[in-house]
Amino acid sequence: MKIFLADVQATLHLGIKLGQILTAGSVILLEGDLGAGKTTLVQGIGQGLGITESIVSPTFTLINEYIQGRVPLYHLDLYRLEPQEVAALNLETYWEGIEIEPGIVAIEWAERMPYQPDSYLRVCLTYGDNGDRQVEITPLNCNINELFVE
Ligand SMILES: Nc1ncnc2c1ncn2[C@@H]1O[C@H](COP(=O)(O)OP(=O)(O)OP(=O)(O)O)[C@@H](O)[C@H]1O
Ligand SMILES: [Mg+2]
Image (cartoon, rainbow, N blue to C red; front, side, top):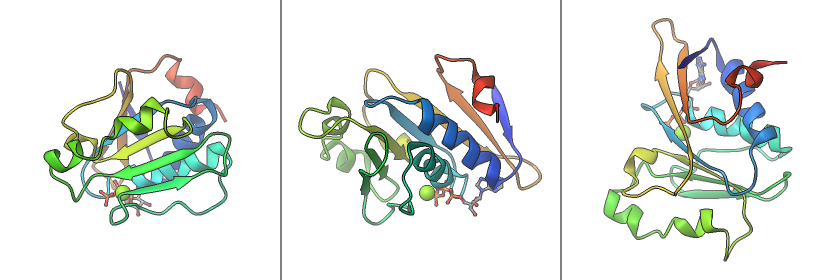
């Protein structure tokens, strides 16, 4: 099911809801073209977790870690990497949460991953016709409409 995101606020709002309900160990695979709203959604997730620090795109840093919220947020961006480089990163360290404190792992350009964790939330963002966006989330173990209740 595709959900309409009319403006930036709608994308942020969805992220805030996710940040409020997701538990440590959740992996969010963010897919969508350049500028589709992946970082914006993660900024919302950060707000929902109670992070006041500003969340900036990790395109060059690869990963940014925020430990100020309800659970840690690990924000990755694989845009600049080839799949074999992604494989060498041992990303499973993040979702196994053995060597690091379990948190929410949000990965932009997840299409570049040669392997996925056992369970994850896939969030696909696409452009609408009027400068808006659409999002498809699969699977979601809750009523998706709950995410949009103010
Ligand atoms: N629902 C929306 N409607 C219109 N514009 C939006 C919406 N959501 C986000 N935007 C805007 O889209 C632009 C790009 O957003 P963002 O940086 O989050 O995209 P991205 O997918 O992370 O891009 P990149 O591929 O470069 O990482 C920003 O200016 C943001 O404010
Ligand atoms: Mg981005």
